[in-house]
Length: 162
Ligand SMILES: [Zn+2]
Image 1 (tube, rainbow, N blue to C red):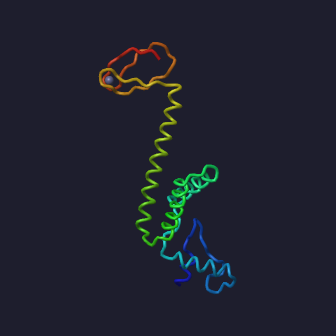
Image 2 (cartoon, helix red, strand yellow):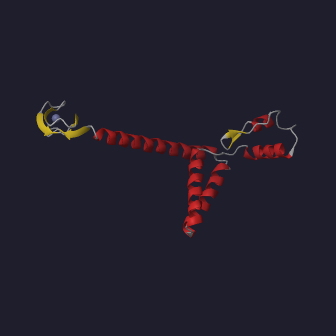
Image 3 (cartoon, rainbow, N blue to C red):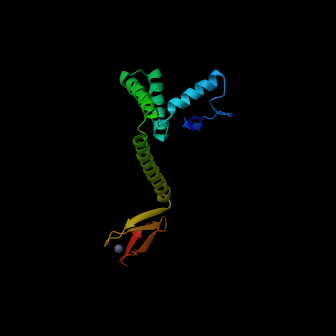
């Protein structure tokens, strides 16, 4: 039963699972897989944060091929070892919390970026004015000449050129 469980431990994003089961599959590849799965039992594995770090590490190491810099190289190597450390870590709850924090931040950054993109697109067709009395933001279409804008909050009217 335990061995069957070992077969189902996911590693490097996929499921390592032999077709017939683990213990009775012969061949060195299957044995290696089996050993790897046993080794990974109770260990954290690869997550989104590790994938990001490894991409950064590869970029840094690739840069040093063309432009050698000891500091960049050392940072790249440290990041690679850090990913190893996270992958083989047995403190699963802590690694999980780190990944969740990263995903939360990524979600926020992507949200802000999309917001900014939408605002850039909107700036071509609309203009935002602030009400002179209550400073409420009011969005009006561009290219209409002089128009009277009525604040929806305090009902004050003011003239602006769009
Ligand atoms: Zn107002």
